[in-house]
Length: 166
Length: 313
Image (cartoon, rainbow over all chains, first blue to last red):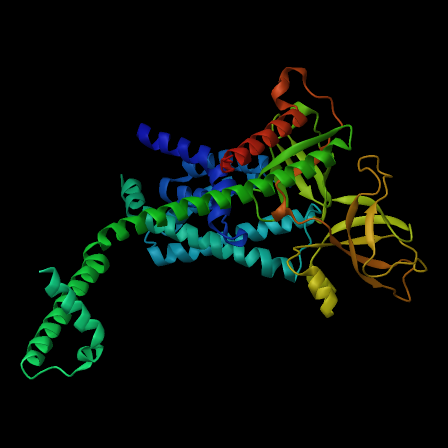
C-alpha cells in the first residue's frame, strides 16, 4: 500500500462494498449465494498485503458491517481484524505456501469465521444453533465465501507475491 | 355500302347456325397457334407480375416488417412498464392508506437487506429524523413485519418477526387466548410435516412459537394470531401469523403453538413504522413520509397518464 492509487482503490472498495452486497448482488444472485464480501476481502488483503493492511481493513469493514447488521454485538468488528491478522500470518508460518494450499486454508478460515459468528450469535440469543442452521446457513455461506475468495486470490495471487518479496 | 352492311346483318340474323359450323382445315391451325401464343404471353405477364410483387418488391415489406417489430417491442416495453406502474401504485395506495390509519405511522421504502446472512432483516430509507427509534413496531397491510433493530438519521434496520430476537405479545383471534410469540425456530423442528403443514411452511425461513397458553385453551391449526396490544408498541388486532400446529404434551402445563409469519420479507416494497420518537425539526419537509409517498403516488400516476394513448374524437 505504498502508492496513492492503492489507497484510492481501497477507498473505492470500502465505499462500494456495502451497496454492492446489499443492493447489486441480490439482483444478480439468489440470497443464499451472496457472500460475506467483507470477510473475503479482508482475508485476501491480509494474505496478500500483510497484517497491517489486513487489520486496518478488518477494522474498517467490521465497523461498516456491524452498522448494517441487525445483530448489534460488534461481532464483525471483532471477527474481521482477527481474520486479517490471521491471514497475514500464513505466509510467515508457511513461507513456501503454494496456491492450492492457500485455497485450502481459505476454506478453513471461512469455515472458522462463519462458525465463530454462529456460535457468538447463538450465545447472544440471536440464533438457534441447530442442524438446520448448519445445513441452510453455515455450509452455503462457507462455500460461497470460499468460491469468491478463491476467485479473488487467483486474480491477485502473482501480484501479491511480488509485493511481499519487495 | 349501307346495302351491303344491311345484307350482312340480315344473313347473320337469318342464318345463325353458320356460327356453329366447325372450323375449316385452313383456319384451325391459325386459331390454335394464336391461342397458344396468347396463353404463353399471358403466362409470362402473370409470372413477371408475381415475381415483381412477391420477390423484387419484398424489400419494402422487409423494411416494414423491421419497423413493425420495433414498434411491437416498444409497445411491449410500454405495456410492461404500465403494468408495473399500476402494481406499484396499487401497493403504494394500500400502504399509504394503511399508514394513514396510524397517527404516528411512517411509510418507509425498503432499500436493502441485512449485510450478514444470519438475520432476516430489512433496511429502509427512514430513520431517526422522522422519529423512528430502536424497538418501534413495523407493519404492512398483510400484518406485522417486525421491530426496528437499529436506527440512524435516514435509515433503519428492521428485524423480522420470526427472528430469534423478536418477542411480541399476541392473541388468538378466534378464541382470544393471549400469549407471547417468540421467533427463531427452524421449520425442521416441526418434522415430520403433514401435507397441510408442508404447504404452510413452504419457503418460510423460520417459524415462531406462541408460548404460555394453557393446555385447556381452544387453539386450532389455521387460527389467525394477532397482536394483543399489551406491549404498547404494537397496535392491537394486527395479524402476526397463522397457527400451523398445536402440541399438547401430558407433562406440560402449556401448549406448544407453532405459528407461520403472515408477511414475507422478500415481497415487501414499503413498510409502515409506528414511530415513537420525536421527529427532528432540522430534517426538513422532504422527510415527511406522507408527503413523500403522495409525491411518489402522483409521480406514478403521471407515468400512467403518459402511457395512455391519445383519444381521437
